[in-house]
Length: 358
Ligand code: B12
Picture (cartoon, rainbow, N blue to C red):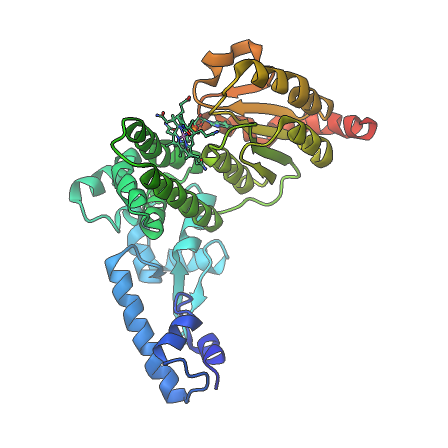
């Protein structure tokens, strides 16, 4: 029997990966059934130890009943209706991954305060998180991202989300404040550029992993184009905007950091989005920025009947009505209504004609 086929048959816990089995098995490709069992048990023990030290990676029916404060039969019903995905052990017991639990709380707008507080050792912080004060998690997140600990950061984001299942709120209240503090400390030269880079990249990785775990609504037929304006490398906010749109069922095209305005205009013509979302944190030359926005990007978006949302630190105060756009946003918290598909229904009908004639 190969290790791969043994792992496929025997592993009730998806986290016990084939590579770990290989390591435990001393790189031997073919193993006896007995050896596989011994190896698997060793991997399981290591896995349970890891579980005891951090937020659980899988939950049993009894665990979830306790955390959601419901009967076990309710958890089983959620799983039987397919609302809460599970895998079954060889003995037929249900196991729920963190991802499936997060998708469930997100999809049903179900906050699970006990679940969120489970991994928190500090009693004071537990009480705050159970009460929904997720901003209290920001200092812990700052520590994890400065240490470059992606898993630690991911666990904190999961914790916040279990208490408040709103992606935009978790970003605004837990993820962004540490970044702003790190920026201030970097400006005051109390932290170095390499420390700031580690923190930024750790946030990006944790958010990418996290967004893949949460519930994504089915496609809503709407398309968005997201980019940083020319000269701007600060792409975390616009990534979060894009991730949020994807969870709401939008099809998102990311153009990335510092995209020349002519290229944004070109992409608008190619992709025909319903919404163009741009980030402009660094604007070195205001006159040039306004010229590019008002003469390249805004006309291209208008021609396609796409809404144009431009965000950035104090963008309203800096540009006000000198910048032609449908929305100027100082914060992504304002983005929920902009992304609401109902606001695009009538545009979509009109857009078909605009697109045919464009
Ligand atoms: C990480 C970081 C970097 C990284 C960026 C990496 C990356 N991939 O993003 C790197 C190292 C590349 C970088 C470079 C620079 N940075 Co920098 N950076 C930061 C830092 C620490 C965090 C940025 C961040 O992600 N913040 C959190 C996000 C969420 O905030 P935000 O982008 O402003 O977004 C908020 C709003 O603006 C809005 N928003 C933004 N975009 C959008 C879009 C939409 C559609 C919506 C709805 C909302 C929205 O929503 C967010 C709040 O909810 C900030 C500190 C800070 N206070 O932000 C400095 C900061 C932004 N950087 C700064 C500076 C000066 C620079 C450099 C000029 C430094 C240099 N001398 O080289 C360069 C410029 C590079 C360039 N051309 O863009 C200054 C900017 C000051 C200013 N406004 O003029 C800051 C504030 C640091 C400081 N205290 O001085 N930086």
